[in-house]
Image 1 (tube, rainbow, N blue to C red):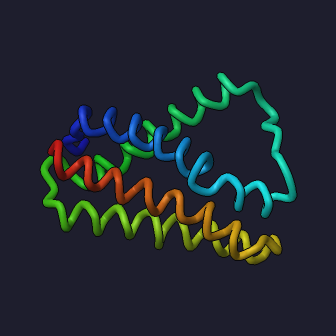
Image 2 (image 1 turned 45 degrees about the horizontal axis):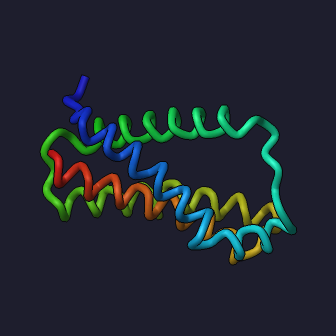
Length: 129
């Protein structure tokens, strides 16, 4: 099993959760709600939604840390974050959005989040690693 910097995983989890709150809150909530056709009511209770989100962010940060290794340089870590968030996650989501007939604006907001999140993970892993 590859060495994982668990402090960076925890820091990335917290930072990713905060970024999500900012991204879908003050930064892009108006665009997102408009493009979703109005307010969206989650199908599960908010505390459970947040718990699942934190758990999935932890798993994503752990996998990213295993992929990146314990002591990445800043350029490598940011490049890996951009590749992961933009190319692997974002482009896959964008393809799904195109076939689902979703708007470009909605795709930009939703695909932009993992791009920003994994770049943030990269910065954290480089600085803490």
